[in-house]
Length: 299
Image (cartoon, rainbow, N blue to C red; front, side, top):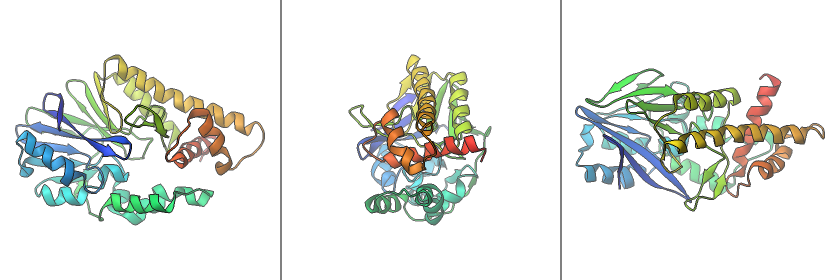
């Protein structure tokens, strides 16, 4: 069921295993915009019924934007292409090559761990490939500062890197910020509110800067893909938790390295115990650890 979180802005929520998964529909007088397409199946099973409930025809969707290159944010692109025939399908230029090619994202995003002696289980690889859906070329790119006017409702595009290099968000005039995974608290929660998986970021300085930018922006409402909607003082607390996780992870890495050089694989369990625990997808914390090590080495 779509929930109106601000005038003309609807949150469409489904489930991703034990976690929430949200997309957003912005409806103006001249058309609608969909932010994120979920995994393969999300558009057909969740977004299309939401449109019907809102009384929107598929042809009214004129923009589809992928917030970033992760399969749970672009995997429904093929379905979106089919359903929204006149819509432009776009993403940031830095993430576009990964979104358009399973081979590329498998090597650069999900396969990054393999060269460091870490990996996902085989069943996770199978799920990732299925969730990504078929390769679909985008229609173009969208960059920071672009203003998308849907008629009576406009959104400003924000570049919010860190989790990915080309991560995007949307800022609305009423102070609502749609940020997907641009800030991730201390990690992702299940529906019971329990910490289950870590927050992966690949660029330490960029992730810190994005969190600080959002704190300075101080939006009235903050919408993320895997957390419940946040408003008022909850926004600041969530962003503070996001920043503290980065500091706590850095401190855990420093403590571990006091005993001498360690491999990334060797650091992972100790760091996960310090800032987690993470019963699901613990390997994803290695990407964040790697971001700290790369920053320390000046890479």
